Image (cartoon, rainbow, N blue to C red; front, side, top):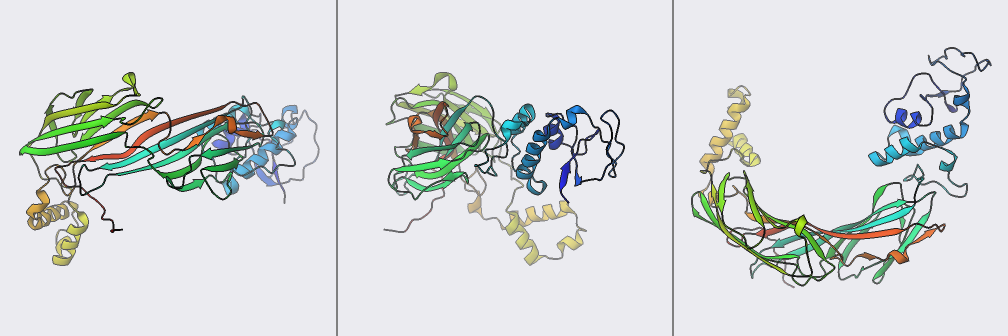
Length: 438
């Protein structure tokens, strides 16, 4: 039996479908077999159908057969088997506001892709953003080399009517820097070779990630230096930062902000003392934050030398009730399997038992680091820069072609942000992976 879209007096499908169908004058939809109904006049109510739906023959209901066809096509492609493929708020809002019309019908010679069940209408333009995320582990030790990697993505928003194809050459794909590339299903990419890579894609509606990549940093680290922290007493630590920002970087690279955070997840910070050479300092209950560069005072085309000596005072040390549950439960199971039965299943008793066993079996070496119990101490750097990408990834706006040809401006921006950018305490423990000798 062929399903049919019926006009109902009351909504029979809620949520998303009500929002979409309401925008084109259909108060509700229902899929069922075609009923056998006797003809009635346009001015009278046809009565109640076998499914209990009241049918109305009004000019508004029968004047948009094409819109119904487009809506039916949209539902079958955008929600296959009842599961929506796109839950983007901006896309759903655009569909609800614009509705469906004859312009949403794709050309006969073009097959509408699954990633674009709804066609865009409005002012046309293309936006690209190359986003590098820098991950670093800086040790400041002769025996341990620093590690700097980049993970990035090219974001796109193609506000283009119809089903156009967009193509451009992506530059900066030197095999010595780029480790891996992955593309959105809408992209057609030939075999990679050389420094350039041609890409052709039929863009979906709204924002999407055109490609992901992993790369080596083509220049030095944006923030380098060292961090030292040692305990001068049981509840007081002395620290020293000596950093260099944007060394070797030139305009138009701009650093919008840079912040260094010292986290102390196991020690409550009471106060700190010290004045940095640049920026401001504040503290929370479990961290100290140093704002070197702020949004109101961005830096471009020059190197910044920043130092920050100081001390931090903590609340008296207290054992934390966060043991290694796996090992503790293993001890409990091996040595005293009847304890849970004797305690009557009380979680409080089990917790006390775990703490008792862990405290009893804990070696003194496990408490050498007073900052993080069974952990390490470090400082984390966060920053944002605007300008050329550190991976070398680039798009020339003049080389972006659209077929069929339309006048659509192409805007390209690049930003670099910090991911896991860590300064390990030079005077403390730090994790490192041993590499085999060449």
